[in-house]
Image (cartoon, rainbow, N blue to C red):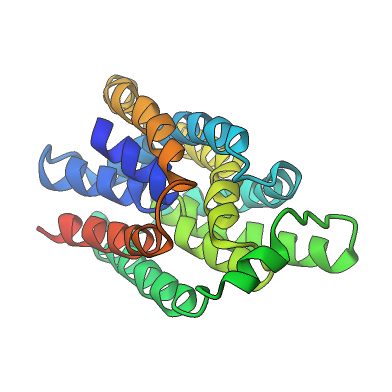
Length: 246
């Protein structure tokens, strides 16, 4: 679990998919319980990772919290949909979402390498524009709903929105994503808890490793080469998808 936390903190994506995959494939935890435990664990890992990213200058706090606030409502509503999906179908749907998220990140980040674009958007955090609030609402509700339904952090989808709609540079997209996920994970875990799909003993075991790892992993994001960071963002959710289908 320590390794999963490091991956989540470094790439800002895919850690929940790894956790779900391991819980389902290795420990044979029922998928609904695995989803509830995973999203609850993200409350702690993203809190740790967000603090680390903010200190490293990778996170735009205000933007992340606004988007995350909208996402919290979507996540809570999404858990009601998850309850109605059969376990076997949910395994396939969740793994499919993880694989798709990796493909989307590959498609978009392949065009983000020019250094001048990275510098042109660095440090801007425009939250007073009305268009920002529209984008924040749509991004939060959509990604929050996906998170609540599939128990994943929806981090690749959030990163994609931050890169395309908000013009964030890659490193700040990674760091701000952690901030966005925090309220999404909190309200998603509340929904799963109310449905009886949250195992607190299992949660404590998962959090013990991933929270420390997430803080450590975030330290390497700013120092890593763009190619390595991009590769981690793409591969991590795909591996999580494969683990679920083993």
